[in-house]
Image 1: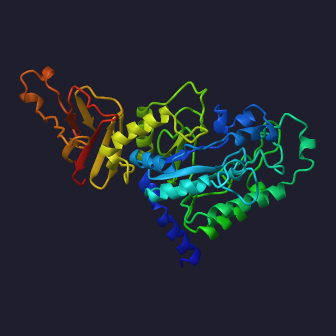
Image 2: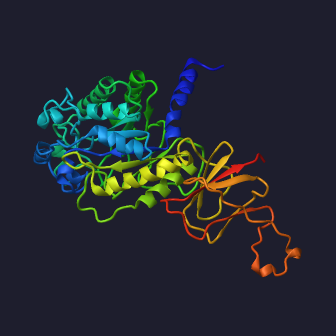
Image 3: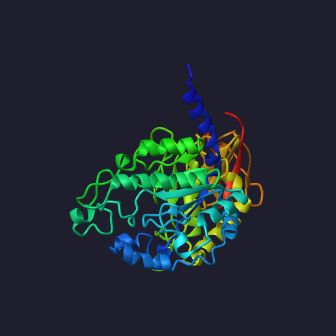
Length: 432
């Protein structure tokens, strides 16, 4: 017999359907590391101690941050939710936390960047999420371990006066602040656990964070919130970074690939490579075809502006989504196996063929003989004709005529590739 807990769980799963429909979101990494402008983990990479690192907080201006403009850019680019780093590993809080002065209250009196984000993105119609780092390299009670900027020092001496229990209470208190100060929060992204240890030193995991109690508190405060998988206990979804499964594998579960444009999450003027808009779009439709989402990161600079590389990507995606939204939003995997170079998504009686490679004239659709009612390009609605099925015995010269394999269907494509970022053919299928 179903229990009350079963009913709550069913309701919560239903409330998370917005995430599956959305398919695409914006990740925003922003904080004092944007002043350093050479990787969001510059504190760790360069072994900077907390007192020295504080100068980046002093020069974190955020004076050009326009949350409404960023929300509009996200919406136009096809994103329907966003996640902001309320606190990253450097411990700096983008809201005026009552539990520390290492926050916007220190250098931006009167500002609440979390509040600005939540208000603007919610008003534009996006779901709002907050990222919270379980690590805190600035906090005096966070013990030095294998992923701490001071790991090269006398660890025993550094940890002698630190109290991880006191830090745990601080962590829980800040999460309560975030979940009680901004109305409904749709998604809470914790980061991260490393219980196995690193660099010869002990790690931190579920016991350190008090994950069971923390998650219980989160559920009590926001019963329908979505929580990721980084507390070292099961969450509502898994969140691989900058990698995706090649194909569906194992038990179905909710998942989201977190991706960057440059390889860095924060604003980084030293980055030498950039993913192209087409590469990122191909990853998005591939994730959709496997039932997953993509959370694409932007890293504003110290004044709050998004750099040209990111704005160009957002503009390209905006142009494509204006024409092709239905092939991603509300779409998902299909049972049919598409040919090589094609990523297929579907909904109802429609299948969308995302052509990663432009075929040489004909596109064979395995096993679809007699099922294609109509085929057309999505960007302009123009028909894509099907190849004629010919009896080889009736051909004068069988070497000059394309023959469709038995049981298959084939489309005749134009020689010239359509001038869109990623061409998509829409199939209307008859039932099997």
